[in-house]
Amino acid sequence: MRQRLLLVLLLFSLSAVTAFAFPLLMSTASERTQQFVISRTADLDRFATLPVDVVVSEAERYAEVYGEEIVVVDASGTPVVESGMTVEDVSPQIDAALRNQPAAPVPTVLPWSGGDVLFARPVGIGTKVAGAVVLRASTRVAALDVARRWALVLAGALLAACACVLLALVVSRWLLRPLKELDRGVRAVAEGQRRTHVADTAGPAELRALSESFNRMSDAVAEAADQQRRLIADASHQLRNPMAALRLRVDMLPSNGSLLTEVERLESLLDGLLALASAESTATERAAGGVEPELADLQVVAHDRVDAWRAAAQADGVTITVDDRTPGLVRCAVSDLAQVLDVLLDNAIKYGGTEVTVICDRATLTVRDNGPGLSKKDIGRATERFWRGDDSRRGTGLGLAIAERIVTAHDGKLRLRTDGGLVVTVELPKEPLL
Image (cartoon, rainbow, N blue to C red):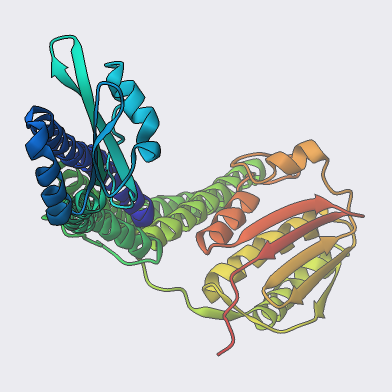
């Protein structure tokens, strides 16, 4: 952005300097050309008014002093003075002057102009032409004067261009420094720094106001994470105690099978809601600058959770195996990774057929079963909160939503597909090798 802004400012400045310098250069050349023409026309007028007996000596002296050639003829074209050139050399100009024709305009003298210019003037009073005067004038001195004047103008333009460049650098820095600070602040928040602030005393008023708004937003995000964490802790404490008391009273009632089932379902729903809220809190805390997650060994966690679920799987006639491929560490808390795997194993055991395979490959965890899988429509909704399939045995509808939220909170991805059964793939950021 800095380069684009500088380019625009510099192009505008150089265009403005050029638009000012070019007319000034042409005006300077035109002015010097006009002086050259006026000077030589005055010389012609002087020779035209001299008597014949004087014009010869004056022409020779003029040619000696100024180094310019002159020819004077009478009305019949007979040479009166030939100083440095002959009548034959300038016969067209003499004929035009004797016919009292206006001379062609002199082209503008430029620094690179060279050669001579012929000036011709009729001699006489009124409309009666008594002769003609032709002067060959060199443009060398006038061209040198134009070059010196142009050098001054171009030097001034160069100074103005340098001043514009300096001004563009100062303005771009003044404008972009607050934006650079904001970019640094946004990156810091994305990297997990809490209550990141940026300087709000530089730049235009609009950018200072934006910096102040960013600082308030950073504080608000951090405060929201703190409030969410406190809400989860309070809800967990306040809801579990009445639920435990209710469970005790239900256990004491006779014929309480259906009631106990509903209480267990309510407990499961409460646990799921609290787990989902905890996952949301983890995501918010990381966005607001929470503690950097610990590293987890994917294979160790997978073997630990498979061992914990093996008895339940055998009770339902399900075989669980672990396929260890390439080992790797992932940037995820061990407890969070274990919770994700618990959700996936629970679903696979309940609804996934008779074989479940857990594949560990670097930072990718895959849970595959040989069950009926899900349709494309159901796969698209499987991670929605409270979504339940057609199977009446399905639980609260929060398991995959919890797993998906935990994975995304750790900058990972959770994907589902049907391939001879349901295949759930979890990709987590891996720890780079040092």
